[in-house]
Length: 240
Image (cartoon, rainbow, N blue to C red; front, side):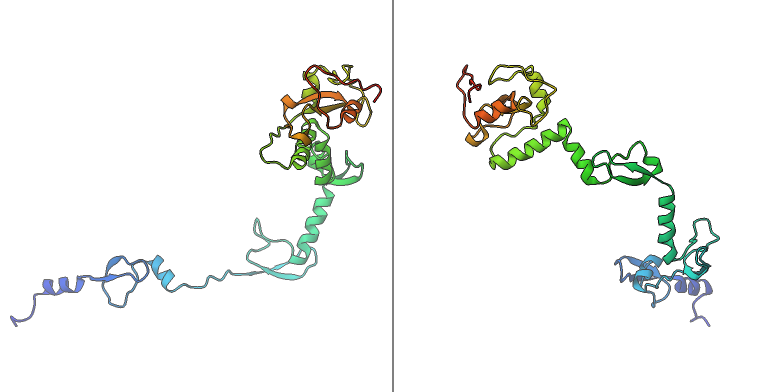
């Protein structure tokens, strides 16, 4: 019986791992059987993916008492209470119950808003909000800049964001055409209301910038039209 291997040598040969290559990630790994093809459980799930089916529970709707199925029970903390048909109806009723009637500050139409937005909601829609914004000083400046962009149609022209009130304060509310005082109480389209006049008209290549604009009366600006004024010269617009 001397030709048989020793017992400890026989156990060592059985425990020797087989070196194989994973068919998913290509990593070399050792295994005890030749049928294994992947190195880990993650690669095995990619090699043979199993469909994950969520369990659905039988629930009863609290509004219509009909049976519906969901992935959670109604008795759970965040479980569904209503079926699909009643869910939107209950959500709308809850939203309307926690609202209040307000009046739009722009168009005067009554609308409903959440109770928590009493001090924040002022307009009924985004259109009214944009109209009210364009009436402010910054909104009027943005609208004026977009209008002059359309008028010039030139990419190399300088078009700044001009706030009219800044120009009036810079010129001390004095018309540079007739030299008279501009009244702050007059609003457009009053003839004596304040307006911005371009020293070099836009139609003749002038820039829409602070250095090319001055304060003037609306009637003086309209009478000047697109004419240019020499240095130190003023228009006598009384007889125009």
